[in-house]
Length: 195
Image (tube, rainbow, N blue to C red; front, top):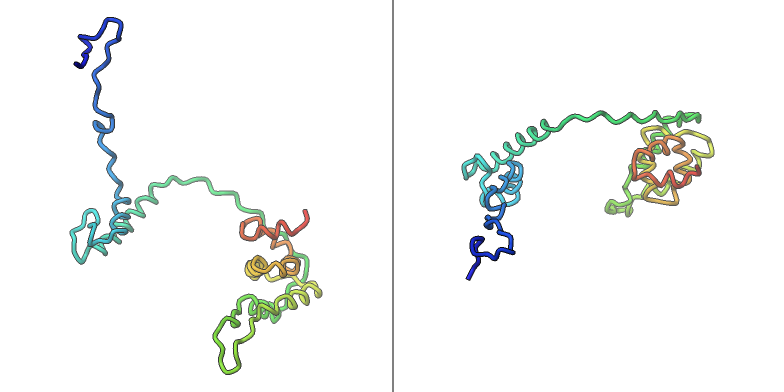
């Protein structure tokens, strides 16, 4: 026999009648339009029709149109934030600039990947990146500064080859350290430089 508050002992406090779980009385939040669009894109428009579109051949285009409109709506709802402080300009490099012909050769050394191409009658072409250590030694011996536009590629090359790091960082000069503070991929430059 189940006790009701009326038949409970006098010592036992009366309990409130059990109500349905709160989730049953509160409606579940409706999924957002963006979630519906993502679901339709993942399942395919044959299995899930995008919201507000009739099934058929027009459904994929309607999905893309709705996703574009929803993207704009979502971005428009973002509140602007104060802009981050601009970084200080890179320090000036007092060394003389690299001559134009040498800068062109440096660009060729940093971008050429001909050694990976298939061979012809003469075999594979040499990988010009292998000449970079000698080129850097010659440029450092003459005291030239690296062209600013080549410093990122130079840092990428030094990141992949530790044997290039001392010569590449010496050639890149203070701009390399300035860039390394802005890009975590080049943090090795900060560790390799004393102070």
